[in-house]
Length: 432
Image (cartoon, rainbow, N blue to C red):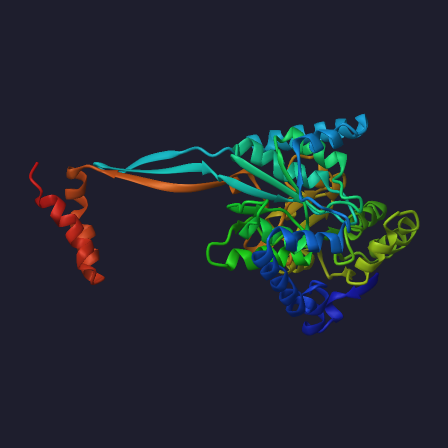
């Protein structure tokens, strides 16, 4: 993992350091994803099965997991894992319960009452990544708020293992969150199926969940199509930026960086620090800890696109972080709270030496579905409100309409919309 001096880099070199590793593949990737989407739209289940056999299980014959299948797999889960899931479920539920929306009703003018109301989405698709790692934690992050919002139809999709099965942990989460509609498929083909529908999978109103570059691209493409679903956010390969000083423990810093690097070869991790001593110690700690990681090969690939960066100050580190807008930001500083106002562009922030990023991944209670690729500048971390849609109402009395008529009609005439004005005046002319 390379050590860089930020002030010695040219503007172009600085931009390259902060570039996400998969962006250079975007044109080819987008074309591949578009081809998969077109195939699913044309061939339905047959296309989804074809891709699932190609990438996951070459003998899979049926996409849907029955409720009996869900129960069968959940029963296989070890008690210790069940207990861990139960604990995480409780913290996530506690945090998200406090986010429940309230309708409002306001008299904006005498005789004019406007309301804002919330309605749970009728159908949601919950994408749970699979492949190199099983992620029941993501099922919790999506399933718990969907359960609290009480979305009538909750659809879980996830790629099966080579035997065509889904993990017992994932199915136990599905049971806890009241999810009965489960399909064995992943990747861009699963996103396409949720969006356009197939013989087995009815389309959904909104798609949630992180994934690799193909999943992210598929979500974005489907959301742009006429009649396509909404999506939660562009949540792609994982990333972590750590800001630390001499008060940080280099073993802690290294462990956090590796915790994200092991997610996938296209993950990216960065350390920003004014301390050369800390950076060198962290580099040595990474090398030591890699030796005992089961997913060391994956982490090493991610580290080739990552960096340890020496800055001139913590303030400069904060400025760089705002430019990068990381999915996860860790502040390993004694006075970390003092810097929060300077680092608002991040998906989720981990404050202090004893707040590992992995805590947020599993059980602190916050949601780990977060914007990546710098989208933290304009997207929010996933929350309960994402599982609702809001709409407004207005009710106007004749007296209220009379009072507002001059403003409405004048603005309508100013815009040249005579019928708008007439819709007001004709009501005022009406004699009860």
